[in-house]
Length: 235
Image (cartoon, rainbow, N blue to C red; front, top):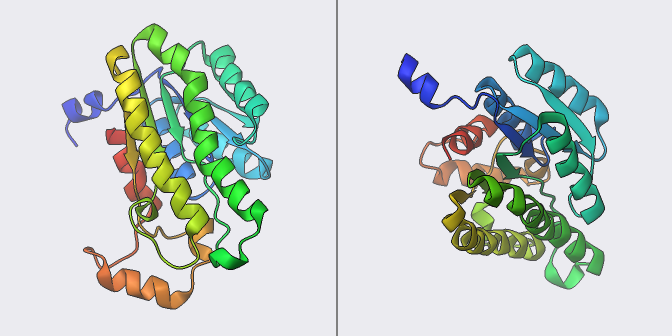
């Protein structure tokens, strides 16, 4: 790529929070943003060692990062995450709401907790993050919010009532946030990936469904975390 194209895409000294940043799509996003010079705050709940190894990769790319033990579905944890970003790096520019979980089963077999956990993480977590970063982004009249939704926010398959509802809700939240923060020069977008290889969510999907997806895909393959990261970088 040409020098101008590279400099246009420079995120030097910008600060990004990426939720669910230590695996799959989140990790690809972290590395892509770090490669462009952004400093990154990553939350982790269960895998501090994955976060430490990711921090080392970020350092190799010449950027700085910190890991914070935080669960996005808990408001107190989120505040800790945002405080850590501002304390460590002095500012906040980019919020990527990527944390997501799945608890797939037929609606009539779905436990209350399976519904609640998925909605709390995938939708409420993104709302809380957005609400808590909004004052910083509005005050500086600059910011980018990218929500990682899903093709399942637009259409469904069997056993995904909780996941689909959360991702359709996230698309609605994206539209509302764009309307409310647009006047403060804050861009808000959603990316809706299809089936992406090498993510914890895809591991649970039966092989015949993945084969069908490959056949229907324009590219004749499953998506790659890198594909999503490039779109996030562009936004």
